[in-house]
Amino acid sequence: MRRSIATVSLSGSLPDKLTAIAAAGFDGVEIFDSDLVTGRMSPEEVRSRAADLGLSIDLYQPFRDFEAVPPPVLERNLRRAEHKFAVMQRLGATCMLVCSSVSPDSVDDDALAAEQLHTLAERAAQHGIRIAYEALAWGRHVNDYLHAWRIVRAADHPNLGLCLDSFHILARDTDPYAIETIPAEKIFFLQLADAPALPMDVLYWSRHYRCFPGQGDLDVAGLVGHVLRAGYDGPLSLEVFNDIFRQAAAMRTAQDAMRSLVALEEEVGQRLAPESRPASLAKAPPAVVPSGFAFAELAAPDTGPLGDLLTALGFARTGVHTSKPVELWEQNEARILLNTGSPESQDGPVLGAIGLESPDPAASVERAEALLAPVLPRTRAPEDVPLDAVAAPDGTELFFCRTGRPDHPSWTDDFRRDPGEAGTGEITHIDHVALAQPWHHFDEASLFYRSVLGLQPHESLELPDPYGLMRSRAVSTEDGRVRIALNVAYVGARDGAPDAAWQHVALASTDIVATVRRLQAAGAARLAIPDNYYDDLEARYDLGTERHRLLRELGLLYDRDEHGEFLHFYTATTGRVFFEVVQRLGGYRGYGAPNAPVRLAAQHAERDGRRRGTRSRPS
Ligand SMILES: O=C(O)c1ccc(O)c(O)c1
Ligand SMILES: [Mg+2]
Image 1 (tube, protein in one colour):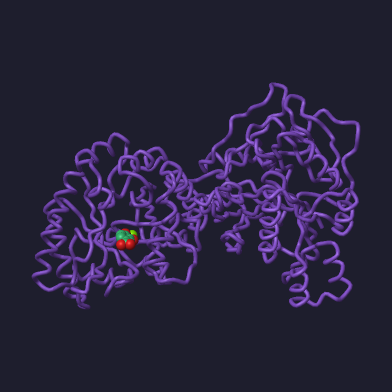
Image 2 (cartoon, helix red, strand yellow):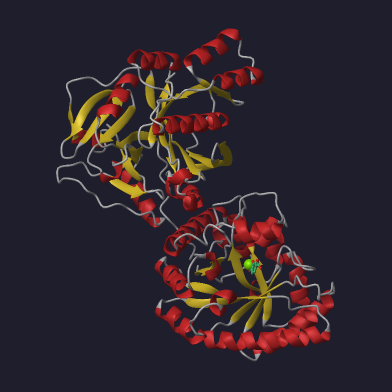
């Protein structure tokens, strides 16, 4: 299908927007009136720039507050329309969006609206222009697509049809099924946007929180299915008003938008019966769902402090890479790489890469490429095992691995083995990793993990931090073998200090009490949890005197859900990185989110203590 996007969805000047839209591979654009009016390019220049970039101008929009008005107002509105028709002719645009009126001048009279829209369509026809009438969800008298359709049908002009916009339809919970009753030739245009479920005024919601399909909670794919079943074969056009996208780099947002459309078309194709599925819907090779973590790679200036911490946790160094300054540390199936060759780690350790176990690494890469994930150049010596990686939106490298399987070379073969054995303590594997997301790429990240890796996004949470709010959303496989927590810190730069962009690796322990005691014996610092937390825990849960005493004594945090219980603790932070140790009892599915505010407060206290030159008391 043809793919379009409205210029209002991106940041920057009109020429920059067009460049970004073409670079992302779109076929066409909707020119937003204010992008033209506020810019220096003449309509003719915009027309030729778009043509040079291979973009068609599919829509000019919006034209506001036209219909159902008293005669003098109608005259003014028609005059306004004639001016815009002239601009459209210079642009080479042949479809104009008219959104339902919000003006107090308009009256609740469908017959009058139909008559005046007929007049407008007749004038438009003289310029070879068609009018697509859109019901805004907050229109004064017309706010529902079926109402708009009744008016368009009554107006009965070949140059008048509908613009359907997924946001306006789904935001009002209107039943999209009836779209299938509208004749295809009357659906002039289809605009697509998603939005997170937020209980707020619909105009404010639309103007600030729209996002690309797959990034919110609306069933955009279901709606597109109805429109295609109606026989629509025009462009699928993204129209997103979003405060964050307005500030982010246009090139990147356009790519994110294209990924969203490819994933959307795939989902629509899967949900449509073969007879109503257009052949031109994008088909990508299927997502290859990862089956576990192969490793987490920490870049550090030196291995000393992290090596000591890993030893205290029960890991042992088992090998050194044959061609790079990278050490392999293992405990059962938990593997940590320490990379001392990375320039990113000037300020201390960072989590730079994650290895994911893939049933078919080559297929994982094909999927990633089809969804516009940046595939990273291989930087390996000729004798190294081939290992493919893509860059996640926050820059983390994701490697597709097959560890120790006979059917595929294993990345572990690139390590010269140490004489010692892997650690055999209570830590069995990586439970999850938590990655700090740049605030303006949060929606992009959840769509990336969902579409590229087939992970399922969970609820988006807002967690209080002493200096702001942390937004957090987990993505995971169905079986929980891969869990990634995406955190965005809206923590202000206090006193010029950088954001609290902490990242962590959570290790699963089968006996967290033994792991704590192991750390205590080694004298390794843990994050100190305040006594008040334990008083509150006793108020919230009755776990028995002995258990409460043990949690307090060992500095363990506790949570539970309907499936089971969760025990966890955190190490002190080095650089941007810390470890969490977790024990899931029963089928607990969460991440201990209710305890995150306690952790964040404790980490700020620890960091402030370090800055003042005093060390916070290790527990
Ligand atoms: O928010 C608006 O005014 C507006 C304008 C044009 C559209 O197509 C739309 O969906 C919303
Ligand atoms: Mg719209």
